[in-house]
Length: 123
Image (tube, rainbow, N blue to C red; front, top):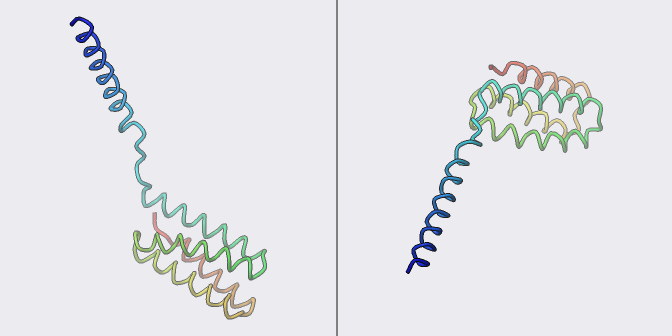
């Protein structure tokens, strides 16, 4: 009889310890979602990085890099509002120019517009 109580007590103590460890771990690793300012800074950095690379690369490579940037901008435009939607439209226009083999001057002008829209993102 004593062994049963001892085993039961040990099982309960083990269960309590597991629950305490679980509760101690919960909530301590929570990360706050990024602020609007952080999102704006991240977006500006992504666009700036793309533009710098696009100016030094071949149109085919820039087009591939732009496709990745478009995915990110599409996700953000739905969450962040009008400024991001305008940035997305500017990036889509750039993709159209790449696809139609627009002149270097047209592409450069669109890169400049994209850069200006990214710089205008509010914090």
